Image 1 (spheres, one colour):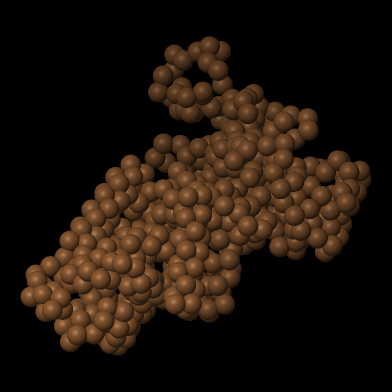
Image 2: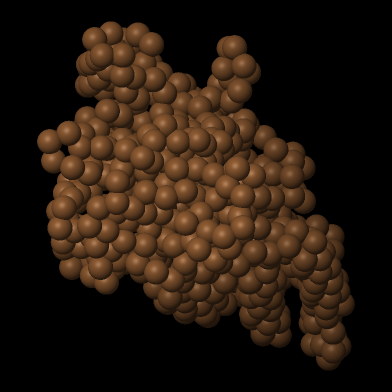
Length: 606
């Protein structure tokens, strides 16, 4: 009696604890937090509330052979920690991150409303670099293009529509030059081999010019490369041409160079009179071509690895979103030396070099230095920065680079509306299934069936409480496994009740029949559930190797349900049955015999 009383007290405590867990949507005990906005505060998977399912694969390559190389377990675990830190700090929700096989990473983001932001935050490497941008760059002689590749150099007049006036005159002698807007130009005719060489050079110069225009439009400083042409040996005439000043004339071997061009206003009037350049042929002139880079970025050994802190803020003057960065001891030293060097050069020569701040190969800003910065702090700003962008950028810099490059190989988004419909159907299915089981057990097994029904309700509350406390992320497959485990819990009770019936038939008392029935049914219950647990372990292992998260969720949920069902059948059902056996109801043996057992009831009554 005393042992049964202890069991009943334990059951009462279990009911109390599970009620507190389930009735409180969210709760916090010290640093232990559980709960969500979902029903009962449970953690729901993608298919029940919507979200993103992303699978990434390692893209680590050998720098020499450019082939994929295997990654280590430590690298994958470091990748998990970095990605988890980024997502948790961003407020996007609680991620479900799992390593699949040897080189794949599963990331599930239930309830996420901005999947594109999540992908950017996960996949960006956040490689931040600081470089010394040198502006006064010396020309680099283009050795592959020589005087032998040039046939003639001729001064001419360039019309606004890209035509040469000398050609216009030859076609139409009545053209009035005074009425035309004209510009001085230099025409260089190349040989066939020279055209092929120079076309590649011109393409590079023009590409640099277009890049500069785009950068300037975005508020970034990006000086373009130019072409330097020197004509003559002793006192050469030097002509500098940008990408918008070089034009191949129709389908000829001639290239036109406008003299000169303003980057912002296009073609303007000449500064070097065309008369100073007389018509020359390959026999009486000397010409050389040099590349004049707009800048050179010098490595200084300073990167995001040298940061100690990064946080979002707003510029005190303009209110624009910025990222504040603080360097560690080594970074402070390097940054201080760089700014001091640039400032000293400004004071001596007036040339204002820049500090290029580059994120993943893309220029953010290239500020000048107004004074040495030795305190180890700086700001990063960009024309396209928003409050959300600087927050994400700060997280990327703070969390550091991804330990290995990754590539998105699988993506699946579940709409929140579809998730809500799935959840509603799952709840209905669970309620209907549980109700039918309770009705069957009560109508067929009578009082034992009623006890089993009460035990099943307690079992269901224990299962849901464990799902919430661990927490277990419930998916559609997990709900199916939970409902299946209810059926298995009922199966254990059926085995027990059938053994009880046999003991009652042999003439034993109700209390003795209950004890023997439970004891003799236990081996069958144990063996059946252990075999199910082994199956769950096999399913989990294979699903982890193959990345089948649906099967994995089913295996985990079913295993938990099976373990709790054994506890429910043996601990709860037996304790309640023993308590009932001590009440006046025990005198009515027919209440404890399944329907259709009328003959057995009469035998026991005699």
